[in-house]
Image 1 (cartoon, one colour):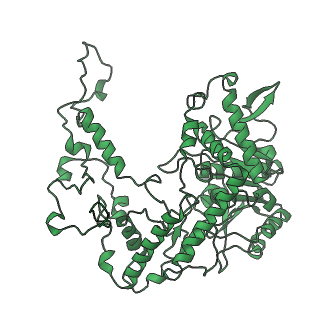
Image 2 (cartoon, one colour):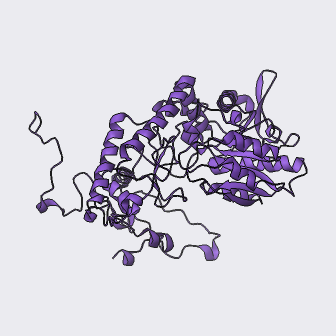
Image 3 (cartoon, one colour):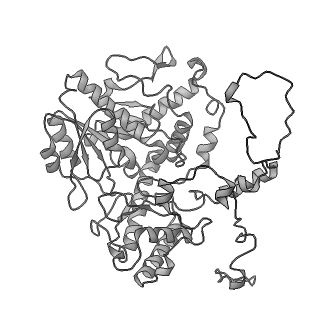
Amino acid sequence: MNNQGRPTRPVETPAAIASTFTGNRGLDIEEPLLFEIGRPETSGVDVDDPPPFADRLGSHARQRAIGLPGLSEPETLRHYVRLSRKNYAIDSGIYPLGSCTMKHNPRLNEKMARLPGFADVHPLQPVSTAQGALALIKQLAEALLTMTGMQAVAMTPKAGAHGELCGMMAIKAALEAAGEAETRKIVLVPDSAHGTNPATAALIGLNVRSVPARADGTVSAEAVRAALGPDVAAIMLTNPNTCGLFEREIFEIAEALHAAGAYFYCDGANFNAIVGKARPGDLGVDAMHINLHKTFSTPHGGGGPGAGPVVLSKRLAPFAPVPYIVEREGQLDLVEHCQGQALGRMSAFHGQMGMFVRALAFILSHGADGLKQASEDAVLSANYVRASLSDLMSAPFGDRPCMHEALFDDSWLKDTGVTTLDFAKAMIDEGYHPMTMYFPLVVHGAMLIEPTESESKASLDLFIMTLRDLAMRAKRGETERFAGAPRLAPRRRLDETRAARQPVLRWSKLAAE
């Protein structure tokens, strides 16, 4: 008991109140669907009947009531506020999704993005009236080039996969300019690569040749040399890779590619681990996308928004897409039409203004030393998690230091009766979003944890001790703790396979009953 006579730890719920009449659990309100609480025969808004008119809908005219539920304004507001409380977010707890870099979003960034001239800029307004916005984009572009050691940058791509497409299209444009587009049709992709890599190559008409990883999870220069030939256009390599490991033979890989006349595309999804520590241009990279919404802490998740600028080496700089910013007689302007051998236009307008503002705010507020420390802290956090769990959870590539994310497999769960999915679902009952599961595919039962630099030691300690408690329960055979978990979440465990294959996309009263 504390000084006020209150228990300092949660107490067991008495059986008599384990369930409630309302279905609520304290302030965790059971929230039905709008169609279940609304009244289709009423409306929360008064709309005047229209005067007589002749419609032109013909057979397309509605034959019956629209059937939408009517709610008062307070009911509508409460419904969506209560739904928002059921969402897990980085603002409510640690988000350990590996390969995602779910870090804290500083509110300073949001304040800057809402400034007049940034928040209300329109893509079709005259460039003479958007000089401040263009100056910001130019400054951000210069910062990205400084951090990567590259020659040119395309700001238009909207996210990672779009950036991959831009970089690979620049490579293809360079091959076409050299008259090699018809002979170089192969893209080398490591087994551990993100699925968007081979998908991007296929989308632009190239074929994929897989490169196996070594037993330690990295790609060897020898394996790349063995796969090279006059038909190879490029490699798509992530560094640090998807297993959270630095590709230590990256210099040799780049030299082999360039000697064979091929290009080096680097997936920049994990750039957060090396900002201020290593410049991709110095490593021999020809093109790399940068996920601003990950590395520079802009809002991440929910399908967007995102931004994936692509930096290009001197070899590829002439093939950067339009538009890009130039300065003419003291004024900034946009080059809107292809110049020389440029690949063309990737999107209608210049990019995601809100993302640019947030990213530059993050960069300027941290400075060069702060960005370097953020990378160091992200790597330190991941290794702290790895070392703290290594005696209970198995690592597929041994007890060796990782970069920004710690990778475990499910071999430690063998004969416990608990699956990787069971373990992840039990984390929800503990108040945590599960780590990335079953990815990368090269590791059976993969559990990929990326804590980022945002988390304090206290936050990490509680997370680690929670996983240790679950791991020890699994090893003791307490399968009832995991079977059917989560039990405390509003919707319990779903049949995810059935939900994917037989989704119910329309509510009906009969189905609900």
